[in-house]
Length: 331
Image (cartoon, rainbow, N blue to C red; front, top):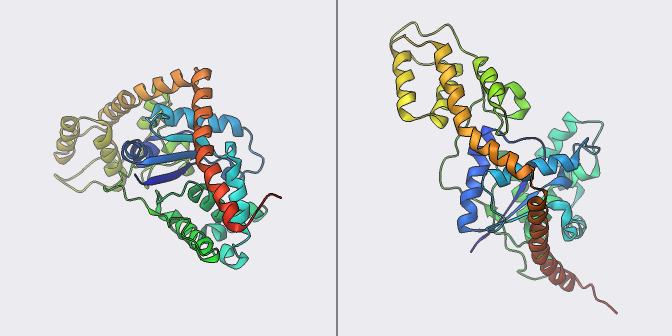
């Protein structure tokens, strides 16, 4: 069975875009692969060195991923900082990582532009920590987005470099995980682009959001004055709302409003009311699971403890072998 490792950023609540993107595929993945999912609290310090509530953010992410289907019995779900072997491997990889190659990483150059007053060593060595996260479990697959492809290539470079330097085939060379299907792009409510936190809170529908807030956001979604010709092409803001309805509504509901639009009879107020209720119907069971899990301290403690034990079992074995390969010996 192939080993898959993927990080989860503790940077805010999950929205529909996250759910139909990574989360649903993680849930599928755990059925057929040996999966390690970690909450990347160390990584978050590269951009937020003094977070207001690191523990609270980690807890929120943990609760929401459990509520959306990650099963700690089927996969290993853990917090990055609970596995000290990761930082040991990170140190060893940094000994063989070169400043020039790290400075050329696109994500580093982007961060330098965005946060010129916080260009820290952790930001520079982000790719080596990411590599340590993955190869500590001898992973063969990594789910990566387009913006992380260069970091995956760096992981492969560091794994090969270790193997070549110590004349071994110790680390598998990880490759990108192929989900085997086109990921669903969930549009935002602002009329352009995809749903996401960076576009503003009003653009996204969060999984733990209450019905009143959802109705308010959807009713404020960008529309136009309506179609003026039969069967005319929908402009982007309208097509986005129809795409969102396709995801959360019944097929006949979508067909009904599509027909109204094509016949120039659509009333956006009615359309958005229906969309809001369908989103609420979809998110309510998830929100209720989030609330139940959030109130169960014993369960959360059990999940975190079990996850760190499973992750450390793998990591300790890897580091023991690495120390022997490098030549560390006890007198």
